[in-house]
Figure (cartoon, rainbow, N blue to C red):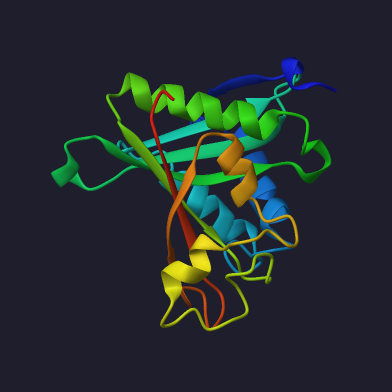
Length: 192
């Protein structure tokens, strides 16, 4: 089924069916590469419910029956930036529906939502805990930037998806998730 068969709507706290489907999707979507983040429904529901705060955006891609196929969130950050800086967190697509344009549609939608709120920059962190890139599984110090300049995707890390969506790698936090497990930082201007 093509991405044209989806709608992207606000995830609302009173829609318990969608909230529960979103939490289940979070567990399923991160099970392979980051199972400790949301290991069970309790933790996943906590993450979903946090997305309803005033400084957040919570959007879902649904099929014709209203079933959740993907979820994206945005977090308004750092008041000192006067509303210009947002974080994309999280994004997840049902594994059986990946590579069908749903993630792309969600990322574009979030960009538009942030643009409407006066945002200027979106950033994200994309962890590499599975040695999917050449900046993982090694000691990045003392030449952190040299390693980052020469990054290669060796196992399908999502940073290349984000690059296709207009994001640029702007940094890396070595050992963020443990020795040799960095967080790759990416950003883009809103509306571009």
